[in-house]
Length: 120
Image 1 (cartoon, rainbow, N blue to C red):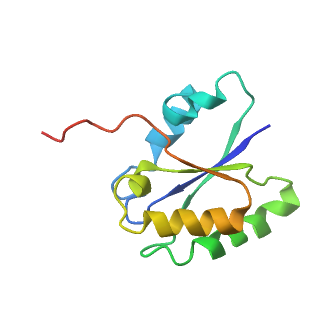
Image 2: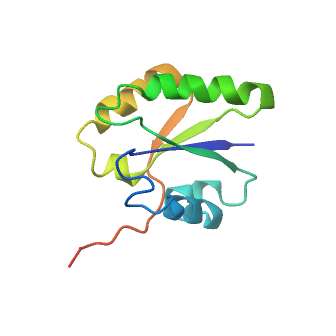
């Protein structure tokens, strides 16, 4: 069973994105990049912020998640990077590289498909 962790932008999460509901809706509906989990028993383990610009604390945040969830037997098997990071963050390449080097699991760019084509 896949256990999915979503990484989002601290500056966007909860202030702009209203609790990151679009990522969760897409996961539940298996839409967007989450379509790869259609007909599987994948679960959303959590949504974690990058820790703030320039993403220098992402590795420590992942280590803390591991520490807290290990006794529960709940660790991610895949990490998805939300569009708030992949589409808008000037540090996204560094953040993704840090995650890939230290996490030891697949890191996938993208979550929901609900981004408007144009603002106006």
